[in-house]
Image: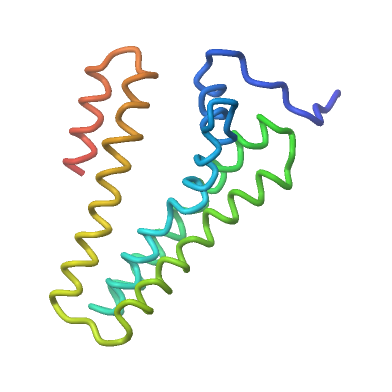
Length: 165
């Protein structure tokens, strides 16, 4: 049985090719996407810290849920990079950097808030995190979903189902 040691590049114009261009940059100056991939977990770390300060059991539950979520997320960050470059080290590096940004978000929360968190600070931090997530959803996720979907109605229905959950 022949084993493929280097993946073939994605087909031009395919969703995987578009994803690889977004992740790895191209001649149009999209290299900043690499940084976005690396820090996209920052708000999750911040939210976990704030939740833990409000109620330690809630913070622990959120931390476990996010840790479980990070396993497939790490694979989803690493796979397009690996398939675009054939480099396991580069894929591992960006997936690891993505995961490390969560503790950095928690550290940011600790530095800004210290150990003393008021109700105003809780509201401000949760609002900040919510704003980051809504912005990413509206500016990046939904336009990409509509661009790759066969039918806009499917994306709209999936978005409404996601909000209902």
